[in-house]
Image 1 (tube, rainbow, N blue to C red):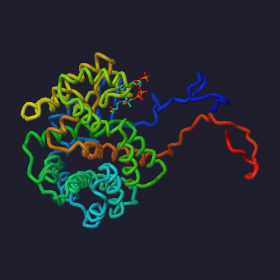
Image 2: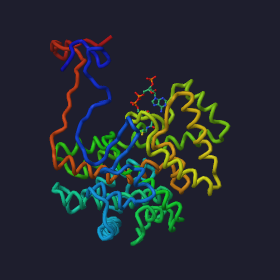
Image 3: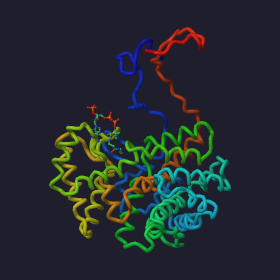
Image 4: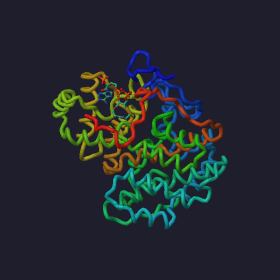
Length: 388
Ligand code: COA
C-alpha cells in the first residue's frame, strides 16, 4: 500500500484524506443520504418524526429498532425516570471537579465515572448494553444540568419524576418547569440530533467497541471527539459568531472580514450533504418561532441574513449547528453548555451504534501510507550531530 517517496497529496497516493467517501461499516441505525440531503432513522425520514414524536420515542426507535406502542413507551419512560438521578458518589465526584473547566471535559469525565458505578459496566451482552444505554441517556441530561448549575455556583437540582426528558432537563438546569414552547423546542432539537450515521464521534465509539472494550469507554471517547469545533463545538462557535456580529447590519462586513482572513463560518459546510443539511430547516423554523416571542429577535434576524450572505459569497449551505445556536439561546441555555446539549441528544445514536458494532464485530484497523524516510542507519548516542 505504501508509495515510496510519495506523499499523501501525490497523485499516486491511495490515501483518502479524512476517510472521505470511505464506507467503513454497514448499519441499520440511520442513513445520512448526502446526495439527496435526507436523514433516516431506522427507516423513518426525520421529516416524518420531528414534531410528531418525542425524544423518548426516538430513543426507543434507535435502540429497539421500532417506535414504541403506548404500553412500551410507558415502560420505557419509567426506566428513564428511574435512571435519571445520579448516584451520590457520582454527584460528589462531579462537585469535586473544577466547575470552571470546559463543560465537555467535565461531561467526558463524569460519563467515565458513571461506568465505575454501573452494575453492568463490563457486560457487553445485548440486554446489559441496552440497560446501560437507557441509564446513560437519562443520566447525561442530569449531569449536564448539574454542570450548568455548578458553573453558576448553584446547587444541582434533582430530576422530577414524571416530567418528560427535555422538560426535566430545563427544570434541573433553570430551577422551574419550562414553558411548553421551550420544552417542545428542546425535545425537537434532541429528536433531530439523536443519530447521524458514521460521523466522527460515532465512528470513534465504534472503533473503541471494535477492540472489545467497554460501553463507557466508547461513549467517553465519543464525547471527547464531539468536543472539537469541526464537530459538536460548532454550535457554540456559531453562537459566538452571532454575538460578535451583534446587529443585522454588521452581517455583510463580518462576512467580508472572515473571507479576507480565510477563516471558517461556523455552522456552514458539511462533508456528506451536497446541499442543505436536512435538519437545518426544522431547527430554523423552531428558532424563528422562539424569536417571535423573545426580547432578543436579533439573533434570528442576524442568522437569516448571515445564511443568505454566506451562501451568496461562498456557496456554503448551513448545517445542523447553525440554527441550533439561536434555538438553544432562546430557551435559556448558556452558550458554554451548547456542545453538552449535542451530547445529550446523540446518546441514543452512539449507544445504538455501539450495540450494533458489538453484535457483529470486527476490529477496526485501517492502514496508513508511510511517507517518512526509510533505510536510515543507527548512529550511537555520542556520535549524533545536532540537526542544523
Ligand atoms: N467556512 C468557510 N470555508 C469552508 C467552510 C466553512 N464553514 N467549510 C468548508 N470550507 C471550505 C474550506 O476552506 C475548503 O476550501 P479550500 O479548498 O479553498 O481550502 C473547502 O471548503 C473544503 O473544506 P474541508 O475542510 O476540506 O471540507 P470537509 O468536508 O473536510 O469539512 C466541515 C467539513 C464540516 C469540517 C467544514 O465544512 C467546516 O469546517 N465547517 C465549519 C465547522 C462546522 O460547522 N462543523 C459542524 C459540522 S456538522
